[in-house]
Image 1 (cartoon, rainbow, N blue to C red):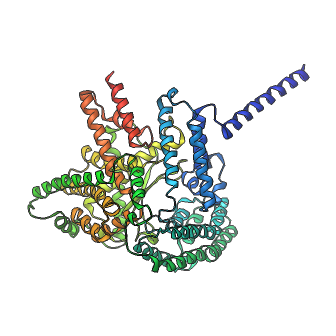
Image 2: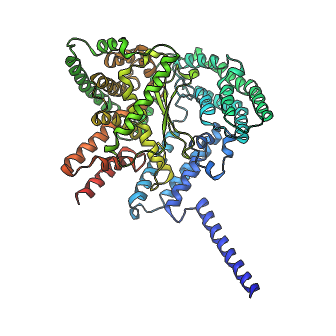
Image 3: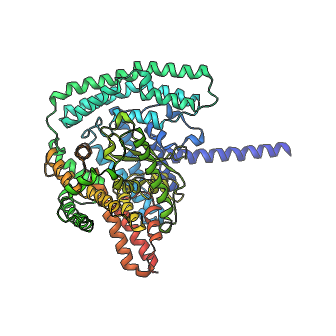
Length: 605
């Protein structure tokens, strides 16, 4: 009896193993039986292609899978071709499923993934029509921030992975330079200001001794937080890091510096992408990519002019209420910019106070928005200063999402390069945009959704995510967080900033404005300091089309809310509306519109 039972159990285990193996093989190599399995497979194949992305997300560490933390991304042409073939293969498999048989979240996921994969294929055509080394978010300044802020070091293995990555910097930069040479061969050159800016930045980066470099100093801080780290191991890690910074990192930067020194005499002017090969066609694609709409550059330019006029009227109405009936926008805001009450002390203490005040505004907003949302983030957000080595070319603020395993909070980075750029009347709006109820609110909620595939938890579409953040600024006013007229002027200045982007981005890349013309227009309409306006215009020059996403997305969400209010009347519930916007993950605007329409129909029943 025991022997027969053993044989039967063995047979059952063998059958179970073969069944499991068959399912695994089918899922990995063929069309999975379940489209839900396919969604996860597609994300796994696409999402695991870049180890640096995996480190940022921290999806697999909770399962003991962390080998990717020892590697930097592969920037070779061969790897690029391998990845785009995966995209094509996955799109082919997706289209083998019968869309007409899908409903609910499966149907949404099908449409979003088809949109995303199709866009990646179209984007591949333009893979050399960009500037991977730039003053904003280039490889040369992203890498130090990634290694110092996002590569976590909690034990000796993490530290050894860090050392492994330092050893790969030279390989990554050599691949980067090969790609830059390919761009040069087809006539794709960065604007002149980019060359000057990144040369200054990189020379400063390698100007310090290894012990003074952020790659070393941040390592020291993280090792100090490991309570049980043996002193001998600590010293080994630090000694090896100094050696690698000196013999791998610095030589890699010197090679990149030499390349840009050779490139400098070949670069002509600060032009939009119209000056690149097939530049007009490229810009038309970038407009579609970032707005996720079919709007043309001309339509967006005119929309921007219309919005600028509307916001200007609202600004001047507040000017009048405050007793000024004659000043232009530039004159009035220039006066506010130099008013002592709105400025911080230009010192370390002043900068520390800015960070504390931002955190206070986050805490206030967290309590104030309860009546507008059924769901709130469970992951926290904190404010940090933009690292000093990269603050000159960085924007005034930006947001970094939390790790998906909860080990790193969302981070609102504030640029404190010049204290006078931080005006008290604009800080609340910036907080609401970057943190709560803006980027952090939307992205942290999406990360914790249980009803959608993993890829839909990612901030994939600029028009959606930036549109929500700009919508959040107006929502904060509706909540009652900006009752002070000067805070409201800060909100309107921020909204004007985004409306001007529609005009300036299309002006630079479609209407062929020059850099100085764009700076002059932007300052006249926003009243922002010249240094900040210059940074903004230079941002649009290296990332064409991205600036169009904000207003396009905001206006879409506002239009959808207005339409829902009109059709549902007293049955309209703003919490339910926000649920539709936030609990489906990031969506192309066309898909978002369909979801709101479906919700309105369901509410009428």
